[in-house]
Each structure stands twice: as C-alpha cells, then as structure tokens.
Image (cartoon, helix red, strand yellow):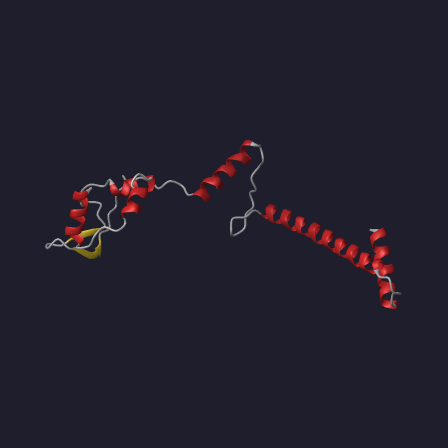
Length: 156
C-alpha cells in the first residue's frame, strides 16, 4: 500500500486523499471492471512522449467490456412486470407517448372521480353539522342551506 502511495505521489505530485472511498469501492461490482483493465488499449487518454496525459480522449470500441448491473428502479420494474405475467394478468397493449397504458389512466380517473364525490359528500355533512350545532336562530340563507343539504343527503 505504501508503494502505491509513493507511485501516486510521484505521478501527480499530490498525496492520495481519497483513501476511505477507495477502501469502500474497490470490491464493488461497478468499479471492479474499471480497475482490472490492463494495458493502454482501454485507456481513455493517450500518453504523449513526455509521459503526461493528453486532454484528447481516445475512442475505444471494445465488445469485451462487461455490462453494468441494472439499477434499483429497473430491477423493480422488471420484477413488477414478471409478477403480472405470473398472476395471469394481461399487460396493457395501448400505450401513450410516455409509456403509460390508457387503461391505467382511465382507472386513475375513475378513482379520482370517486374520491371527489366522497369529499363533496363529506363537505356537505360538515356544513350540515355546523348549521345544526348553532344555538342562535338561523338566518334565512342558513335555513335554506340546511334544508337543501338535508334533502341532498337523504335523496342521494
């Protein structure tokens, strides 16, 4: 390890300060492939004659590079998709531009309408409770509203 610190210092003229990050990531699958490359054929920068790295990147096309493991969101989406197939559910075939099925949006709209109806009914109940709980005599408007709310709630 000390030899590696010396080599880094000789190359960059700076001390290596990311020791803790290297210890955490050195065996991580994502970074193992990048650190195990040998030779200059996969290097991103080519070396000049004096040994300093050039700022011009090399375009290397190598099919032997391992593919990256899927991310968390991709893995969850794949699991959900396979679960619907196992349960025998038929996946929606009609999709819009963003990839969401039209059936999904229709279901959401129906749920939203039911929720609006429920909230409206709850609001009417609260208004009626407020009017019934008043101890002073009701004004003509309040009396009309109370009668209307009672008829609406009992009829529907």
